[in-house]
Length: 153
Figure (tube, rainbow, N blue to C red):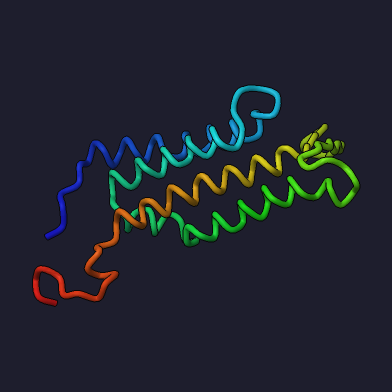
């Protein structure tokens, strides 16, 4: 028997979800000069994913995010550790920050710092950890051990 879903909750979550993801990306990029950053942006994105989990369960989250949670963790860890250790290759201290600026035709003046790359890694790690938690909550422990379920299958 499938659980009954609330139409009000489903509609509200679908309305809030996209706005929360946009806010999380804004916090990620604004975090260098203002409050926010990778961790706070990742928490907002994770809260949006948690709303989808509450409204629709694990299948809703799996259909929304095609990649497995450890992919987010792997890419995030590679970005964060790469941004932390790359300055050492140039003879600088770990986590030394550099700024790169460009004048792009459509976007205008764009500034990217190495701290943004590090924060993006942290952002992906936070999202990956929350997705792994939901995977753990959504799986039946009997399925993992190969034991028969309550209905005998």
